[in-house]
Image 1 (cartoon, rainbow, N blue to C red):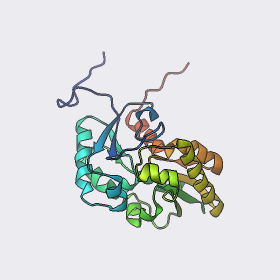
Image 2 (cartoon, rainbow, N blue to C red):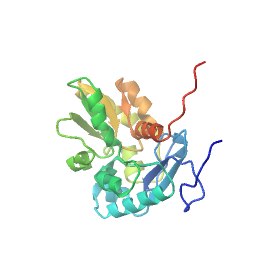
Image 3 (cartoon, rainbow, N blue to C red):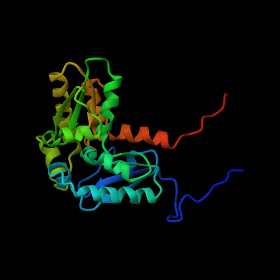
Image 4 (cartoon, rainbow, N blue to C red):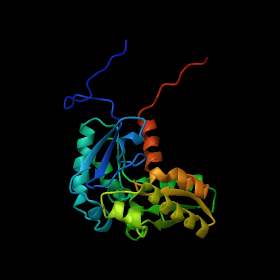
Amino acid sequence: MARYKVRSRTRSWDGVSIGILILDACYPCIPGNVGNATTYDFPVRYKEVSGASSEKLINERDPSLLALFIDAARELEREGVRAITGACGFMALFQRQVAQSVHIPVFISSLLQVPFIHRILPPGRSVGIITANKGQLTTEHFESVGITPDIPVVVYGMEDQDEFRTSILDEKGTLDSDLIEREVCGVASRMKEDNPNLGAVLLECSDLPPYAAAIQKVTDLPVFDFITMINHVHSAVCRVRYGGFM
């Protein structure tokens, strides 16, 4: 007979594997977005980090956000999640400190995948990063997630794409998904044309995974994003028993 025990006396539920730190922002999160729970085949638990706006994280790189992220991560840990991710690649700034503040795995930036991608590509291939704002993605972000200078990366941004900028960065309140798909596919196509040695694409932004299949179609390359990372970690923290031989 299987026996179970209480994991925590501070909650009355179990079974949520992944906790997600999400920014204090307001725009539509469509299926495929990290912020849309229908994206996943397993339960997730969101924790909005009140006061952590896109402006403060991406443009200001406000160091006071660290305490907010740590408090939210600890709260998710108390609520029983098995691992904690984020909903903006620019959270890379705080990856090390947040990971040190809890006792479960933390992977709050999709950029964490870049060293892995680099290692699985043939020699001489570069990793293409499509980011929400190229001008705000710094070496500090890279260093925090282990992207060393010897890893060849090329970075292209979405900040000059009108629908993406006004919908996501400016939070106008509406979002034309078909138009954003055309914009990001245009950026991806240009990236590949400019870089014949491109080996894979990594989507920094948590709003871009809905367009990963379209990006793969125009580049014919592996496309990694927050969802590939979250699914990977979930499969490690929630293993499934294999069946016997038939």
